[in-house]
View 1 (cartoon, rainbow, N blue to C red):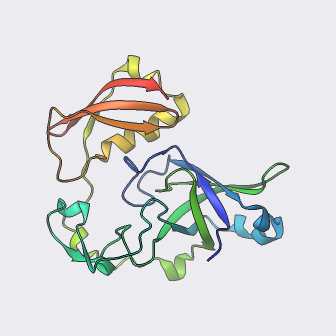
View 2: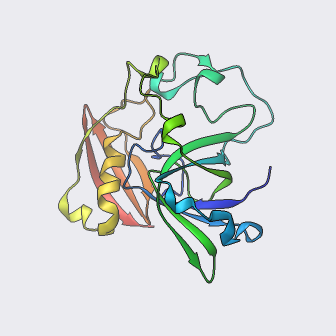
View 3: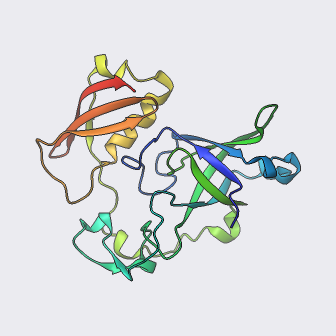
Length: 223
């Protein structure tokens, strides 16, 4: 397997990254190809597609061994499911799969062919193994069944973000950040209203607490 590119996002750490791709379209990513794959001919025709598939490496979860069952966060970390019935990063092969919106493709003097995408659920610097076009006639299955995830859905919180703190976040990143917080970045099994969490995003770090269904930002500082 050869690394063909890396993606650059606003998430320097795993914490806070949406649990699936496409949940927050405002999240932006920049895909820069490695020198061997910067030939613009390799992207000919890609701008005709609205979405693309990314095959990538769980670079922070690479391990030699594997287990047949894992604890999905959506189930509170208490119930085990078969690894192949989940999207856990802890797999025999640390390969991830994401569907993202293709915003635009550019040819640059310094980095060659570059792709800008939205809705990515990847950490900054994640290695990418392959890129394929998303085909609506084949890849979309409106009648698909979602297994154990169907009855759970995504937890949504009300976000209390004081205006004086929100102003410390770059304006173009505020909407995406609020949606990241609303999706509840905490592990499902943590529910301590006094615990303070830290979330680095887009060059700043937020500190917040969650009490019931309300997430309150208590500080923002530049990283």
